[in-house]
Length: 202
Image (tube, rainbow, N blue to C red):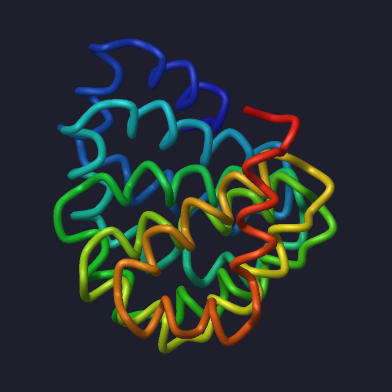
């Protein structure tokens, strides 16, 4: 089935049900490896449309696509596709067991690597996903141990306000644990955080 057709099908309620019911998701995931950028783009866009709905999120997670997304964080070279991967990962993190499944992969190390990306969208989404992973205590502890706090703190001075906002949200989550607070204090960041109260972006 052509990637464009799959994308169109995912735009309708009946189409989404067909994709899930007929177990087409694995086929869509196979398109992540296609050499043509537009085909990969369509495949990720299809799953993003599907992930707008709870049943879609669960179906994608059950197809073991989260693990594939983690691999694509280092394999994919096109910035526009990396943005879609990070967007999809963020949506899937709303599903049950998503955090636990991701923590069994090298996701934190790979997200850390994207915090200094040239593309501000990639930096912002990487920080946002770290914040989502650290929603529960296990995620917070793992993210702290992965040494995500230093690069997130560096992002507080990013020139793009969306990046600063995502970084501060992630740090706010990590600071709920004592270890997180200590790291932020040790990096001498409280004053910079206070300065963000006067940020031009509300």
